[in-house]
Length: 49
Image (tube, rainbow, N blue to C red; front, top):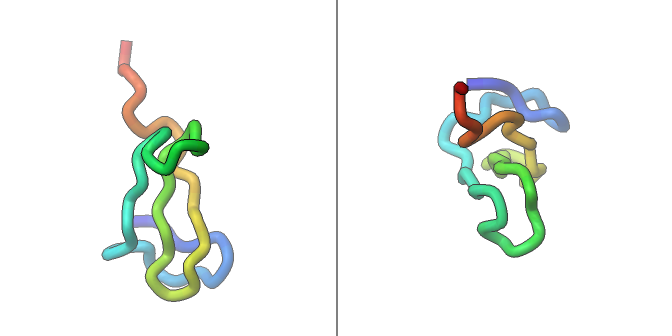
């Protein structure tokens, strides 16, 4: 997995929020379990066409 943009800790075990799951997020993101920063997951769920 990748690292947090704020604290550089591993994002493994962080909570994934899907696009529009919280009502106002067009992109998926992982919440860092260490610092709480939302790390955008670019391209999540896009078709490979």
